[in-house]
Image (cartoon, rainbow, N blue to C red):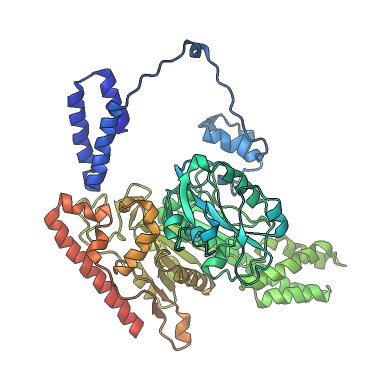
Length: 618
């Protein structure tokens, strides 16, 4: 914007260029001064370059009658992409006839359409260095866009692979005879560098290289997508094992280095083939489903998350409604199976029904039962009309055989503020729903407005002089019920604690609330969003954020339900604050107030830790 404005005033001579530069730079200070000196100077440079770097381009006369030629297109695209998505992405959606939506009258869009965008927006993308890779899979774990993944390759696949498709012997129990490879999708990567910064190898096994040097990796990615599925012999409840599971959230439009999407992606790897998601409006609804693009996708069996977006003010109720509808339907299914047990049907079918009835709320067993029940019902014809009717009703409800995993997603603007009443109602209900809050500590999607999650001293819209009240403790409010599972997590601080919390929350037979620290571009992180995982680690070390799990089931074992998973703060709190423009800018705009608020913020943080420590020591 500044480059174009500077060029405009230079070329038009509406006012003297010196005067234009003066006014532009004054506007820069007014608009961006609160973001820090670095941002101001970068905009100053943009103005100067907009004038200095002007080059006149002579337009050939032949262009006067030039005609537009259609660009080469991929021919094997699904009809939805060719006939609807591509048209909408060309800003020509108003030209679509009603007939284009025949078969989609209910408004549903297909899953996994983001993979066809292949935007190629990164300047640099990671290149895998197999010789130094320790096969930990942490790079895939933290990737916000699922653009880097581990693959297992058999001997035949390794032999037929493209020349650039290097691999090494896979390490791990059950991986005998297989090779291992980390594969990057260069056209889907955003170049944030989070994977590189997270890599724990002594010699980095990922190096950022210019996008134009990685064209051969496009073919390698396509080859990796066609590899035969391998049985994951590792526990999915581990960092490494979870990443051999297909992510059912991929290539979203989230910011480079986004702190939210790694959490959602991991949830889909653990429970995605049976998930239902109610998503509050906000960042997570934008990267989660901006028509016509859908980053949520399906596995080889066609199973994946069912996703829908609702409003700030009713998303929790929306998710509860989803759950109750499924619950009632499955109760009807159970009633039909009990009725079927009294009928004259094969013993093996009765055994399958009994297995399901005894374990209808167990995900693994209901999957096993469904695999048995569906083909038997499809191939069996009862001897009387009544029996056939009952069995057909059960078959018609086949999609409810497997226990659903109901999730409610949203940011802190929803959970702490506008949707808090509804969230409280849903948690109080005692129903088996899982809530995941992406806590960026501001209204991220609308431009960084202050929320009740915003901590003391943070600068945000509506808190330009630093917020003078402390952060709402949503977790403790939920814990007060005594029957709500609550966890506070930060992926970059403790990857294993995050997985443990997700597994416990999902399996808990009641409401669960997971509050996830999510660094955001609105924070103004020193060094950029490539450090988003590092900032989570630093936040916990400084006592800015704490990790804990509150599991009501432990009370039944006579144990303390509250477990504090993070250690006592060991790093300087104020130094942590200075690593983000949302705090450091206050020293420029209101230096006296800054010191006062920083002291208060440190005191608030210490009080939080002492409160959690007391809960853990009870």
